[in-house]
Length: 305
Image (cartoon, rainbow, N blue to C red):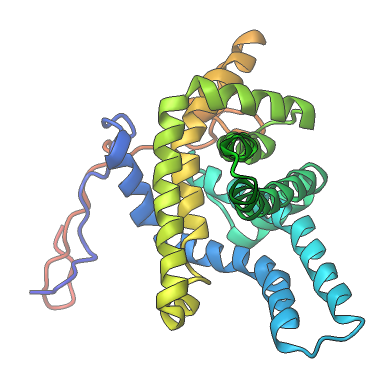
């Protein structure tokens, strides 16, 4: 008896079979795309090289007149490129979610190139917000201690409120950037609105991604060799997958579906039509309809029908 039987086939999976939802759908897509996510993470990781090099320049090279400028140039390069790279990664993961085939490298760089301007602006602003948050947590507590004034914690709370809002908006900005042709102004406006409309789901997404990030930070501090081994393949794409899985249905509900309804059409992502051309599928899915293939019986070179 053969371990694998390639000469017989069942009826296949019907396209009308009940579709998975929620956590079942999440793990279904995740398990099917896990190696693609590792590949995508590595591609995204390459854009962190300027940041790592800037750290090496600061801590490894002798301090000279040009050293700070080299480090600053590398940091600026990272700040400009990380947004478009995030757009590229988001585009690929969006294709995973709508069950559209994706060529990882081609679609990544297509998303990188076509959204470069808006994504670069968002990426630079995100980096400035992160730097502001880091500076605030150092400066304001020291000022509060020096002046014995609790009121100096108020600006710290304000800064971190802005940081949290920016994080929630980022759940939607890059997704809408790669799925629509909205202007940057409308991307920001819609993202701010969706941050509050889906607040409960956004908080859940935030807590999950914050826990994963905290785990990676602890690994970096206490298990650096393991961290350096894992970081090229995890967790950036995995975190992006979680964000997209939770956030894209919100975008479909409040942004994409209303647009198609306004022009009297149905969102092609919900119908099986091609999401770029709007054309009906050329081939019909016959899953569940075809007859099983009869198993070939062993004989003296003759096929038994």
